[in-house]
Image (cartoon, rainbow, N blue to C red; front, top):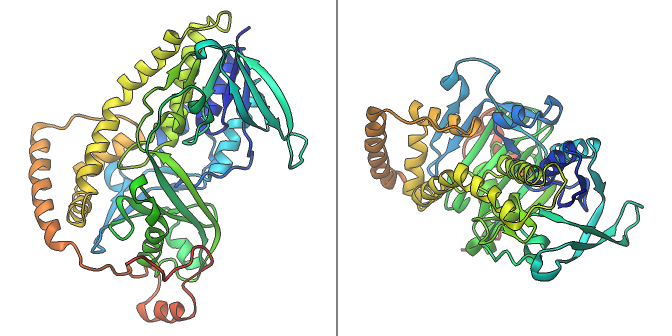
Length: 446
C-alpha cells in the first residue's frame, strides 16, 4: 500500500491528508505546533465554507461590509447588502487560524491520517530524488521540550510546510522572494469592538505599505491589525505597522495588544513544484495572490488537488505514481488559476504603485459594477465577463480616477476620525493612552 507523508498541518496539508485518508492510503501528517497561529488576516471566501464543509463554530465573524480607506482618508463602503440585497447568505468569514487549522487537521486524523506532533529535521531523497524517502524527525508527542528522534520511510512527500519549506530545499525547488506579514492582535473597548461587529477595514497608502495594504479585521473578542510588504521593503515592516496604528488610532483607542505575530509569505510560485515524488502545495509552492494577499483558499485547494491526483494515479494506493503523474496536478492548477494570479499581479503593480493610484483605486471601489466583480470573484471564485458598455465605463472611470487621484494624494497622513465617539472625547482618551503594548512606536525612519 502506498505511503505518503504530508509535512505541515495547515489548510493545504490538512486537506491533502484528508483526501488521502478517505481513499485508504497510509498517510502521516506532521505538525510541530498544534496550537500554531499563523499571522494572517484570517479572511476566507464563502465558497470555501461550503466546498470544504467548514462549520459555523470556526467562524468568528460573518463580515458583510468592507471599508476601504485611501491615503487622504476617503472612506468607501463596499457592502454585500448593496450588491446582493439584504440577506445572510453572503458573507466573508473571519477566522482565527489556530481554530480553523486545528479543526481541519483533526478532521483528517479522524478519517485515518496519522497525526504526528513532530518536526521533520532531515529528508533523505534516494537516487536522483526519486525515493523512497526517509524522514528523520523529532517526535514531541511525549510532551517534553526535547523530542524523540524517529525515522519513517515513505513513497511520496507533500510539502505543505510554508514559505521556509524544508521539503522545497530537499527537492531543490528553487528560491523565491518572500514578503513579510506583521500583525498585532488588539483587544478594544466595548464601543470600538461593536463598530467592528461585521466590518473589516483596509487602509492603503505609502505610510502603511508601499506595495500592499494595512488591515483591521474583526475576530472573536479582538481585532487583527496588520500590514504586509515585499521582501525588498521588509526592513520597514515595524514602521509600516506603526503607520497602520497611527492612521487607525482613533478607532483603536485604549486598545491593548495581546499578541504580536510575523511570518513570511511567498511573492510568486517556486520554479519547481514537483521533483521526483515530492510535491509542494500552499505557501510552500508559492500560492498567495498579489493585490489581495489571499492564500488560505488556494492553500486548501492546492492540497486537495494534489492529493486527488495521487489517489487517481495510484489507483487508490495500489501503485506508486511517477514524477510525470504528479506533474499533472501542476498542469491542472496552472490552467485553473494561472490567469487569476497574473491579473491580480497587474492590478497590484498599477494601483499600489503610488498614492495617486491608491486614491484612484479606492474611488473605483465605490462603483457598483466594480463591487459586484470584486465580490463575485472573491466569494465564489468566478469571473463574470463584463458587457461592452461596462468595459467602456470601467476604462473611462479608471482614467478619470487616476487623474483625480494624483491631485488628491496627500503630502502627509492623518488619523481617521472615530466612528463611535466625538472628537473631544477621543482626544482626551488619547492623552491617557493610545494602544498599550506591542511594537515600540515613535521611532519611525525618516
